[in-house]
Amino acid sequence: MFVVQLKTMIKRSLLFISALALFACGDISEEIQEVKKPELNLSAEQIKDFKSAAKVFDAMPTPIEMAEIIKESKVVYDVKVLNDPKKTSQYVTSIKQSLNLGVYFADLSFTSVFDHPQQSVAYLKAAQKMSMELKINDVFNENIITRMEGNQNNKDSLLQIISEAYLTTDNYLFENKMNSVATGIMAGGWIEALYIATHLDSENGEASLVRHKISEQKTSLDHLVKLLSDCKDTELTIIKSQLMNIQGVYGEMKEVVAADSTKTYNMDNASFEKIKADILSLRGSIVN
Image 1 (cartoon, rainbow, N blue to C red):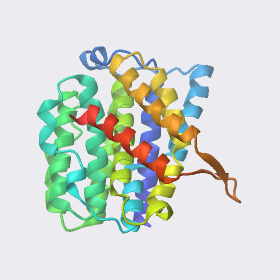
Image 2 (image 1 turned 90 degrees about the vertical axis):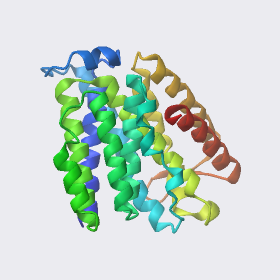
Image 3 (image 1 turned 30 degrees about the horizontal axis):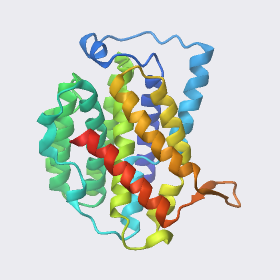
């Protein structure tokens, strides 16, 4: 019951971030230099776009959801698949920092769901470092770190703390209208989750739960690309172009409609390997 409530909280948080990303996604450096609380008077077009953004997160699993799915599929957890939490100093541009904050959010979720609390603390500290660089103040304060360290043997408490970090980040970005930062975090988290899913899917082949979930991600990918299309930042435009390559792979797969009208795609070995290779390349451009 707790995990269901937690996933709902995080999905709601990410939905607010997606709405934020729609409000004139412009130059990220300008956003960080001038932080202020905006008055959000939404136009009819913005309300329409907000509803469109909601579809992204109706279809897109949160990092914790993907971690739970992967754990249920009995794959072997391997911390080497995750991004090194000691690499934070390598990310010097604002876009790199926002993308990798999303990556570290995803990695933090996976280490916690797989019951590796010491690694969770390391990833929380990495996220803290990225937040400080982005001037997202007072999100990962010492109180959060102390609580993580004091609850290392309590998985539910760790997941609760992570959810609070998501929500605090959400509130800060929403209040300060840091649009490109929000988009970068969204994209980084989505890419990292798909990367981990593809690179831990090795035991059950085409019938695995993980691969089935990957086959369901076309809709969320379509909407993520649409959101990135509204951004002017050059680095995010490159990310969008690379995601469009993965869109092309989905476009070649046969659509399957279930009895409840849910759409999935018949992912054969060739399609899976192509997505795996494309996401490896894209993720590498973010974390290296």
